[in-house]
Image 1 (cartoon, rainbow, N blue to C red):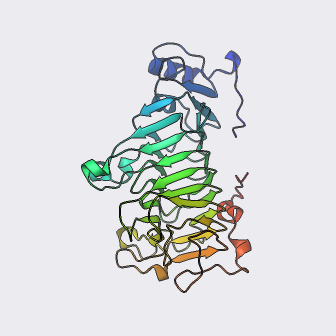
Image 2 (cartoon, one colour; image 1 turned 30 degrees about the horizontal axis):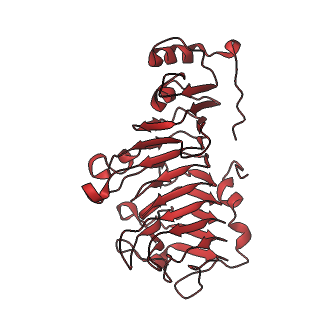
Image 3 (cartoon, helix red, strand yellow; image 1 turned 60 degrees about the vertical axis):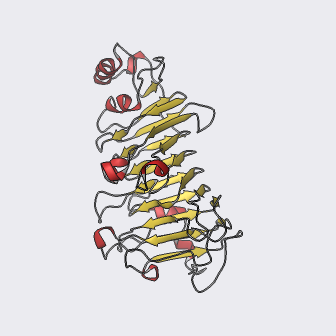
Length: 339
């Protein structure tokens, strides 16, 4: 996926080399591509150290991560643009970035294992996880990945957690933050894909965990799309799976942060395969706000959980050309990451 090129000694960035030397404990010849390896065979032993060495306002900085479990939080600040995290294993489960922070201690965004505030972020062939133990410590939000940026691309990644796994956020209600999530896997139970960002889930698997209930095993989405933004979450040709009982999982509910009346969630499940776990009445109210006031809809879904009834608004065929992956992501700059 990356079009960045490796460069030799001639292309070494002096400031990066000095920073890397301080972080790694010796001189390195690092330029566009650096390597993280726990065994010391790379330029860095932690992902955060590699991020710290990225130049501000860069045009391309790839962090290749060798197989292993990397425990600890990672923060990519807004100045570190065009950073790519790439797992070098043979599958996306061989590189795992994980921590167990809960919102009850750290706050919602503070609980994130990986927090991205920089535009043009990329991730490929790895796993982001928050393994906070709800059974042992009690229910809490525990974010695995916080995308608080624009033009982010996730390709062939896993995002694992329970409550509030993937946060799609923006710097302000008037700011658009777009994410393209391709052939990936997102897992959780309560509101596990949430926020006011704009995101396309393209040919991905969305897996709902069972909470042990026969009637309510959680909510896939909790969108807080600003009412001036026509595009929130699009699930496109994706598959919804679960080990939960039939008709026990909601597609979503409307989140109004701090009771913001301008948060009018927009979610569309388009041409998806819905498992039997999806309820016949798949949308529900939240914190006194009716789901009927949100912008929730479906379009030509199939599978055991698919249905058309009074509780399942359908996108009209005439509207379909305006609700494609490209339409969600184009913005004012014509961004088109779809492949």
